[in-house]
Image (tube, rainbow, N blue to C red):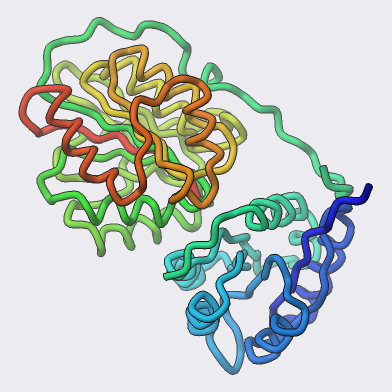
Length: 373
């Protein structure tokens, strides 16, 4: 009995990139490149003729820019799209806009040694195409050899334990976790929160080159002030702190206040920053004064940490399956028994404010948010 392959259309103006992607994807037993296109007009015709399951799309395209093409595609023929993006600030900003338009995920395209580097990214490209094939499109083991990194738990960064003795405080922390589809889920949640909301701390699974552009984009959209924290920075109400790419973000107690702590520890659940690391730090240092929220995402990072938060007295929420791009992390959190409420994305901001007011004294708290790309 044969399993149906994921049918992919590769759209890129570079003949070299098209060739590399075709070779990498066709080497996998469960993926088949059914066609290629060098510009959006050719891609439009090939989509009609070939009916692919997933589209890989270059950010910068000739004859029609990639964002215009993606917007038209999501309006007329919504389908899973993985963006192939350059590691530049302009490329990062365009990619983030593409995610807003409905792209499922993205893969970085380095500018130096393109052939050698893209070949090394074979596992990442294939993994994201597989995720996209099973993702809910929201309009608006392979044969490729690759070294699999060890899957560390949060113990590698922050030891398990009961944490320090809690001092009385009026501050609250709300921890949110997400992965694939998380950038858009975070945007919707932040845009639903008032400027005087308890502070928010976010650990987003995102490449380092994209984390600062993402932070700036959220700052331009949210009523709250959104920044990348420095190590030891105090957490203040009305502020959102997004972890820099490739660094774990923890919440540390300092008397009656909280600080951001950044660490270069190993990837946890193969991610850095890790949701489990942030959630554990909140469980240990904030306990019953916190609220945990798990948003859309692939995998199980954060599921154990959310259960630790619940066991420490926190209130917990998970995004529902119907509004998640991928119900991996929220589903894993539910299976772990760490979720009290399962809600659609559109109701999570309201729930954050409701629960923040219920867990402590007056709002002036800290909302810890961990999310993933």
